Amino acid sequence: MTSTTPRRRFSPLDIGLIVAFVLVSVLFIATFAGLRPFAALFGAAWRAEPDLPARPLTEASSAEELLSLLRYSHLTWETLEAEATTTLFALDGERTEFTARLFIHQPDEAALITEQALGSTITWSSDGEAILHERDDPPVHALEVLPPSEQRILRRYTVTADSVNAPHPLGLRIPSRAAALIFSTGVAQSLSSRINDVVILGSESIAGRDTLIISAPGQEASIQLPPTLYWVDTRTGIILRTQACRSQLDPDDSQRCEVERQIEITRLRLDAPLPVDLFNLQPQQIDSTTLSLEDFQARVTP
Image (cartoon, rainbow, N blue to C red; front, side):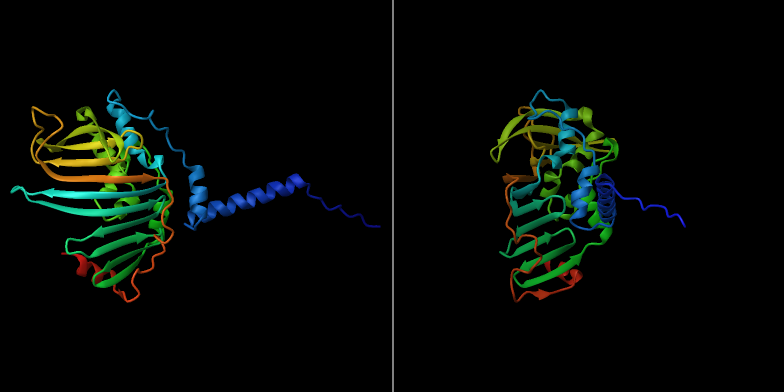
C-alpha cells in the first residue's frame, strides 16, 4: 500500500485573505499604470494629506495659517463652477476686460469657456486623458492627447514639504489666469519666502463670500516692487480677487493702489453637480473643422 498526503483544504478565512490580496495587488498595479477609475479610487487612499487650519480664518489669524489654507485649498472642494473677469488698466485710463467661465471636477476634469473681444467663443475642455480645443467662429477644433505620465500626475498630485510645493498641475493646464487663484498652492509657494512681509489689511465680501485682504510686497533681487493684493476666501483659501499694483499702497488707504491688472471671481459655486456633457470632448458644432494643435493655436493667437 502506498500512503498519500491528504490535500489541504482552504478555510473560508484563507480564501478571503487570498481574494483580498489579489484585489489590493490589482488596484495597486492599476494605479501606477495610470488606469481609470482605479487611480482615483486607490490613489486617494494612500495619500496622507495634512490637517487644514481652523476655519473660517479671521483678521486675527496668523500669516502661517493663511498660507496653510492657500497651500491646501484644493482639499476643501471637489467640484467648482466659477465666472471670472480679468481687467487690464492702461495708463491713459482705458480698461480692457475678458470674461471666462470655469468648470472643474477634481482630480483631472476641467472646462474653460472664454468670450473673445470680437464675439467668438473659445472652449477648452479636458477629461484627464485628452484636451479639446474649440472655437465657434469659424468653427474649428483640435484634440490633444495627454501622455500617460501627465495623466498620472494629474490624478496623484499631492502637496509635499512646504518648501518644495509646486503649482497644482490641473491649474497649470487650464489656460486662464483665474486657475492660479482657484488652485492657490502656487501663490502660497511664492509667498512662503516672504511670509514675514505678508500683511492682513482687513476683510471684505466678494461674490457673497467672506474674504481676508492681504498684501504681499513685490520683490526682485534687491529692488522693492509694488505689492500685490489678494482677497482670500476665509473658508476655502480660493483667491476671489487679486490686484497687481502699479504703485505702492495709498498712504491714506492701505487697501488701495493704482491697479495695473485685476482678476476677480464674480460667481462661485462649490460641490454642486456639473453639466454631464462638459467633459465628453465632442465638438459643439457639427460642421467644425479638425485642425492640428499647431494650426489651431496659430488661428486663435492674436
